[in-house]
Length: 210
Image (cartoon, rainbow, N blue to C red; front, side, top):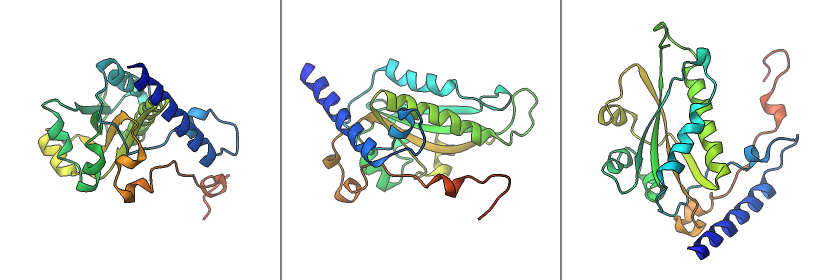
């Protein structure tokens, strides 16, 4: 057991070095933010319930309009009766690597405010904040977390009995980080943190500009 933990720590240190090398923030920020990325390689190990619930607990504390908290998470742990239902929603290219995840999650968002039934224009924005909390929690624990749109949205609504007043947002895979060579060659090439657009391309003072 000790050897396994030591290898895990060593691998995480290597991952951190790689991330730091590729990702350099121009202005000072919390490293947790720049070190978060979306690995695909996972070991197939299970995660204990406390670890899994800590991710949803982090998501629970996200901000939302009127504190409406529109996000909901439908999850399945590997080696349970629920796993195939979520796994079979995925597009084939995502099944190749998510088969080694510990948890699969479908993220949905309630369209209307609970307190008055009116449409909440920020329900998707709010659900995105919850997802980011979850992702940062996973990153802080040295775990892999990867969000996807590559799945059957209509099948998800039918198979998971999701009501029409909820938007289906994305799926998430969570697991322990695996070695890059666990992946097919074409995915191994992509198994590294990527960079971001410069601030000059994403911020505009005063008004919109191209």
